[in-house]
Length: 218
Image 1 (cartoon, rainbow, N blue to C red):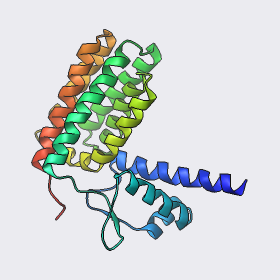
Image 2 (image 1 turned 180 degrees about the vertical axis):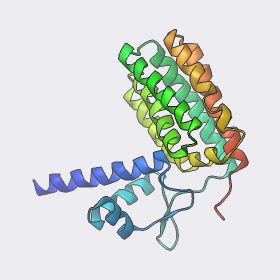
Image 3 (image 1 turned 45 degrees about the vertical axis):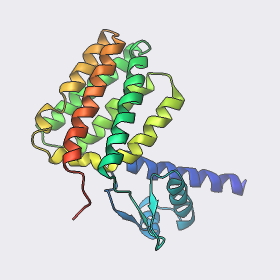
Image 4 (image 1 turned 30 degrees about the horizontal axis):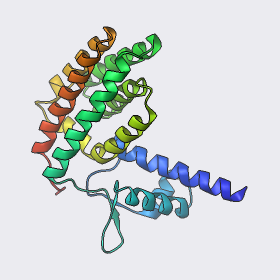
């Protein structure tokens, strides 16, 4: 029984740290200190340490020669490769979702889109990024493809730390919801190819902005 509880705590720590990566809670190049993370999440250092090691094994985090653990910095070629993979798999998930989406699922996505627009108008970058994540994953969950969904979560774990840079790009913010509106319109029509193309355009537009700012922190 104790072992089962211990494993459950390890899994919870892993899930929480991975979600921080996906949501942009960590920054590129940030050093992750076990004791500080344990204090933040209110648990002991052991499950945090084991969760970090698991994320290092998955290459979502990087261990330096001095044994410190950091959020990886993406090179331009790595970011380009990541973008091409995201376009392929997230476009597929969107296309699959179009034919399977429930009415309640569609309503939730429409409500989220409206919230994203309000966040833009209120200049609330944190709310926008949180809702953007919710928007995309609400669509991908409708695909009914758990293996594909896990792949997408791993990809977002790599790109998530960079997404906050989008909100620093003045030319991106005013049009950040354009592709999202096209995605919702295609979902309403159950147009799978339209959803795929709009998701591809959304990822490509964001990647074009991010690639210009792809550098190590000062």
